[in-house]
Image (cartoon, rainbow over all chains, first blue to last red; front, side, top):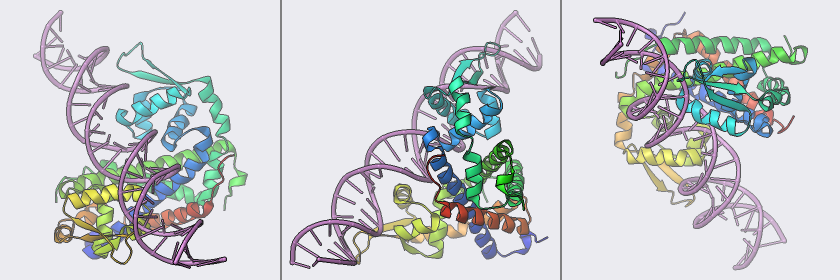
Length: 157
Length: 157
DNA sequence: CGCAATTCAATTGCGCACAACTCAATGGCG
DNA sequence: CGCCATTGAGTTGTGCGCAATTGAATTGCG
């Protein structure tokens, strides 16, 4: 395998550019397609991610949702309030632990799942890749993420 | 190859979840590492992307920068103002076409390139992947992005 | 038991992404 | 030439992502 120390700074700069450009671009391209697909469900893409989690487990503490989606309360609190205002979700303090807030689907929130049924198929079709390649992509992304998360990068060169 | 029509909605939902979760997570994981690496350069990640473009071509209209990074003026205008306030960049109306604004590196902006020299190496090292896998990842991302961009998804199911 | 450290949600503040819009400059066409 | 569509930058408003902080509840340890 080719190792980083063997390459020139100039080459690395180019590869770095390509990787971060393409990851950024891909992320925003996905966002754009989801935006269109989700528009008439009244959901944003991050809201859809939360709904996906709740369609698996219809009741979860904010903490757990954050762990699954890698999001903190600073992002989730206002987002969940919007979902609550839209009537898709209920939020209440746990009786066992008053620090914790439990988020639960309403019947309206559950019902939305049916209307979202064709979103995955349409999204995956729009990627234009065979399922095997998508699985490969997912695998690489997960490996990269795990490595980056555990990298503990030092602040200054 | 395995085609979408042959799969059950339930399977597709799972794959869709995995793909969009992992892409999202990867994008944010990259952002987190860049944030640390760029902190003492005083740059955010999107600002770094703009600087990368300007380090290639030290003078470009806003329009061109937007094309390279897939960003519109709504994002770039305030960002470029911040780079200008930081002294890294100058902005001035083109004489040929008064609608266009040309962005040019200042000497301070050029000088920053040296201090950013180790960022790519450190970033790529943090990914924990061999260069071949990174190239593979980049290739998949670019194919997906191209397909998504040309998909022209219809609004409602 | 009592107090300090930890945990969890919420809030504040800043920057980015994007849609919708404004406004001026330009270019094309009759 | 005169008019109108187009182009390019900027502004506004909404929502997300994250750091930093707050405040209350819980845990743990002496």
